[in-house]
Image (cartoon, rainbow, N blue to C red; front, side, top):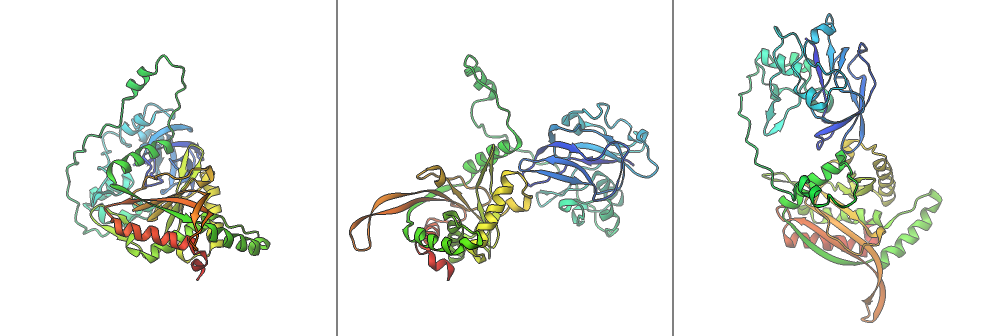
Length: 429
């Protein structure tokens, strides 16, 4: 029976993507692990590998097609002894078929013998990814596919996993599809806005996948996460002097530490000093972490990434600096792998280099907090001797998810960050 090759979900936030390039053509023989195509997600362009062997019988989605929905049929793979005639009426549209047409196409195989693949299984409210062939075989064997461990890319269940599963597994009960609530209105409709500005010269700019995800996730965050904000001014003079001394000593090694490197380290240590705040929201519970995984916002053309520095509390300033430079460079080239920008419990957004004095950042769920960092500027301050003097002051705002962190706990976290930055030598102890 021909096997449908589906548009994969290459990142947790991916709902659709662009099929940038095919590495195979119809008639090519492929094996598990061969590169089939390059797919542009909302974050990066990634290679898509074959998980079964066979012959490419038909390419359903043309190279360069945008907006291909996850799990839409992009190609059909033939097994030994099968020919293109076995594909039947899977698609009459050919390689230039639009994503919607491919998604609605009839299942592969002849009408007399081919049954449609069972619906995608769900376990504990989370979709279990499996190939259509694996779902059909599991249904024929009466296996509960949600109990099978997947060996395919990103844990996808493939034919071999079902064949190796215990034959006595109990079939999963059929559950009715939940009724989704109507989406809350997010402002004037497209038609209303176009009508309002119909007589004004303008250019329509199509949203790419990244901008759609940013709009969706941050709208959801602002509407569903109970934000509150804590603000502190941080005196930077001691840090700037200490940084200057370190950079002189590190110059022969080609290392130059930035203020942002110190901020990352200060936040990582603060999460250890206030461990109750090192947590994320998980629906009906919170997850509290032992290590400090800190995400840092990086602006790129058309959007942003938040690469994560794992175990940041245990890394040296020079190691954090090198890792951050590498992540930022690859983020701007959209070459980060999903595991490099997913996760973390805390984020930093620094707009100080743009001259912004202060701002309030939006939490990136499921994180419990994000630190907004402004520019360090010269201001009049009261010195230790009580005299009026001039010092470098940086404004910070901690946005906090009240479901995870209460006011006093958030204050302790921000005070720990401030203490680390104002006493930078203590961060090396």
